[in-house]
Structure formats: C-alpha cells, structure tokens
Image: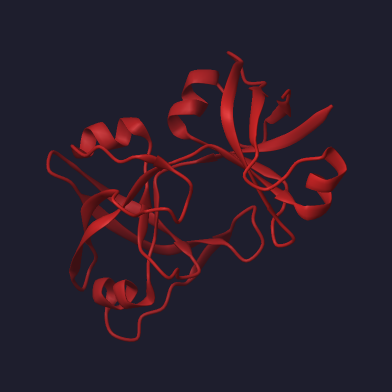
Length: 189
C-alpha cells in the first residue's frame, strides 16, 4: 500500500519581499508563527486582508519564506465569496490567473494576476517517489480515508529532494470527505 499523510491547506498567501514591505512597512520581514510540513516552509505571524469585487477575507495567513511572485491560494468556495473565478493550477503557475487587492497595516497592493485554486497534489521526497515508481508531474488517483471517504483523480505528484511526503488538499475537498490534517490517503492509481 502507498499511504501518505494528508494536510488540509486553508486559504493563504505567498508574498514577494517588495509586497511585504508595501503592506507592513519598509524593511519589514516575515516572522515565524509555526513551521509547516515542508522543510523550510512556515506560517508567518503576519496576516493580510484580501479584497475581491464581491467580498473580502480578513486575517489571511502569509506563508513564508518570501517568494519571487505574490500568489493567493483559495478554495472554490472562497473564490465565490470574493467574486472571482481563479483557475485550478499548480502553485507558481499564475499567468493569466485572477487578480485581487491585498491590504496590510502599512498599505495595499492590487495584483492583476496571482490568485489560483491550488491543484491537489502530493509532495514526494525523491526517495519515496523512486520506491513507489512515481515521477514528477505524474497524475495520480488517491482515496481519502476521511469520515465520508472520497476518491480524487488528477492529483499532481511533485517530486524533489527538498520535500517531505505529504498530500495537500483544500478545505472544500476536506469538507467533502470529512478528512482532516493528520489523516491518511492511499494512492490507488
């Protein structure tokens, strides 16, 4: 059996250093609230408000470290509430995606693109992928073993020696299956 731990990814944002300083003040840097499942990744103490045409969310957690491009990841339900229609994409693929306004205590930024619904994916350490015969970008079928169980198709394999084994689903998928962070999923195809 190919069993992987599940992590539920709530709405969050990745910022460039330039946007951190625009939103929090010149020279501002992200500070660690808690470490995440992937090595070197963390939830920051800093939070922002994101504002769409129909609604907004306060206290959206920033994930660090800073990135080369600002990117907001939301669920489809979040997108409806904001009044936007972001594409389902792999993280980092933001070309032609939805835009949003981001407000912090020192200023605000409007990005023309950068909002996505993150494609469900599994982070594989290279050794795990090799052991199971899985390649980077391969599409997998996975059974969530939550309270209501669910089979997910088109789960993207992301392979790197810098990753720890972990499946990321959004809150809509977690709610549909009853899965929660710490549950297990089985790769079935």
